[in-house]
Length: 635
Image 1 (cartoon, rainbow, N blue to C red):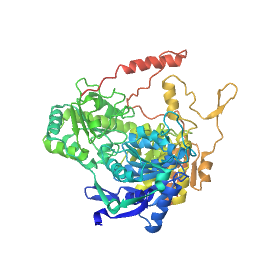
Image 2 (image 1 turned 90 degrees about the vertical axis):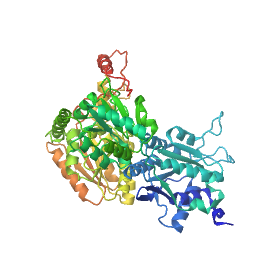
Image 3 (image 1 turned 30 degrees about the vertical axis):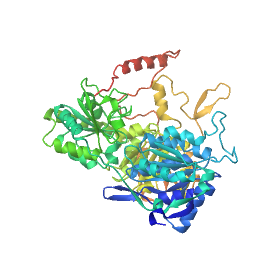
Image 4 (image 1 turned 30 degrees about the horizontal axis):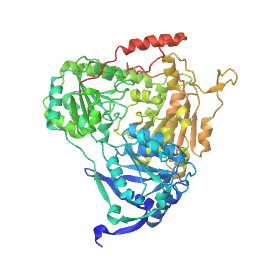
């Protein structure tokens, strides 16, 4: 037998985990394990398959494929996403769940990963491929399709899905999965469904399948014709504007972006994923753009005649529901490694390329180009005006209950340049987008493609695993905290230090505010007692003690009492938490009616056309007026 055809007898699960332990991502000079480890919660669907395989590999080759517990299957995926984003998509984790509810719990995480274009490997267990014990515990039964199971629900939320129904299928499926995980244009949730009987079946595994394999990240350069058309459009522009998306950071293009804008004077606005592309105080950085944007970025965007989108998928928040770009002749130069995004809004100027490579090409071709003096003065004036607005918003107010902007100000004042703020849902993403003054390319981590309540603590753990030399500041509202706080136990079990700032406003503050703007009067958005007869809600807050809840997990808790010095106390508490080696939660009460400054953005949330409520009728009239600003973006 030749070396190339040599085999070893293994179970499917043993072969899979050994294969995964030997996969490497290569990005230029950087080489790191593609799958850093496996999260798993075991049940009858995987304890004898993947569970046994992970134990065996840990026993035979300790450290080759680390296994870590989680307390919730959805949270496993969030940890993997947090890790992947912090590693610029070069590395992630596998997440293994059992049949039925265990698998279904990961679906939200899968959707989050795919929406954010971030790689995760999901290994949900499936029912018997042989159907020998049909129907088994936790199996779905559909009379019209006996083969349809829970794992099929992963199909629409995965970038790749397959099911290992025979042991011999593993080899092609595993290789195809790795291709998608490491492809910048295709990546997202990758799902390999594993029937519980097939996991434990043996197969002759080629030794070549188990050897270390390098997956080189493609960094394609722009086609010369595409680049030239983009260069000509920028040269003709009188008011060019850059929208920096997450692709800038994933490709490591922040230095190329800085060099380009310093040479040309073109201003930059950032999407949620693109914050960090430039430091907040850079002369060309105008802050956030879109529905949660700054006045500086939004005013410049409104007049821009050429919008250069770099690594952005142009979500509705970025385009302010297609109201951000008002110039009648605006054209879009869309630079993206994924053609799907480069052609957004009918762009006639797509540049399908890696962000860094494209910026380098643009910089070389536009070495003699610079915006005119009048435009440069407008950029500087708008930036200075917005910086002054932020200064005021972040400052302590002296109120009994601090508002969210000054809470952000206190946390920011206690932070260090390399700290990472983590957030995902509620009103905090919008305020952070406007107000957080990022000083490091990886210092801002807000999951806002899926905006998943409950992401924050689990995602923060993933960030800390990826960057153990940085402090991770998790900011979470009480509504999102209640969705998924159990990963605090994981932090305690593994001694993972993060700082959690729990902003207590007794309800869903963000949706409460939105509810008012659409004429629904905060209905169903506050945590209050409900009368079982009239179904009306009382005014008094519930006697729920979330600080005590957090303390019950065995972590340190600092409570910041209300008072005119609450913001200063919060700053000291965060500083104390950063100095501690242990996970610490800082609890602060907030006034949910104090909002961040208005940046002039709009978000399309349809209002009822007919209503007996006066507030709803007034909201509909305002909505109809605002919709007049929407326009098709055909560039």
